[in-house]
Length: 111
Length: 115
Image (cartoon, rainbow over all chains, first blue to last red; front, side, top):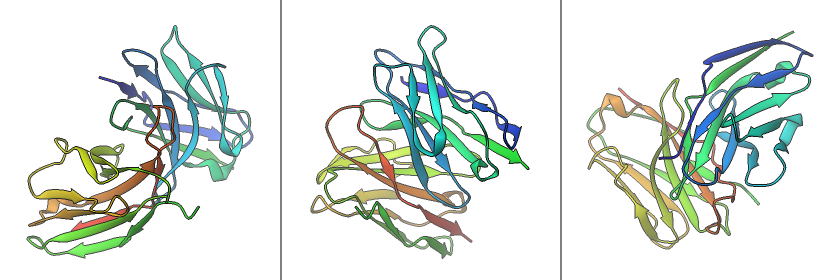
């Protein structure tokens, strides 16, 4: 079964510092990986995806993610965090039916 | 592109009552998905449609849950005889059918509180 794991429940970072939110995957075949963000009491917003090609994927709001096949990871990154980036972040992997999500990581950016 | 629309956004109901949620997908999308999300958890897949055909329903949580997409456009998710454990956010999403790489777009969700 296709699955992802997010090892950190919460990540704290100071505004202006780089941030990383971790995700590892377990798939049979080629991985199709996604990141979504969720603000309080809202739905999920698509950030970026890895399908094939360049291992560094750029997405919305200045986020990027690095696909690493040898480490089976797809970490979300941003060079300089903003307070407004504080939210829940979900990693997901596509299977035949739909997306399978991780438990989520709460990102808190402090001023 | 008006996005995925869900209604109602919030619903409070008494235990034992039936509730129905509606989802209008992005207009050209032929796949529609339902997920449930409880506090502190990631979204949990329930069911999905391709046009009007329901392709997977084994993940629906019990026989109290049912979903329809009668004309391949909007969809409804019904929960009969609600229980307190049904309290959650119900998310609808849509996508184009072709390829694993197509992005799945989510609505704002429908919050259900069973009292």
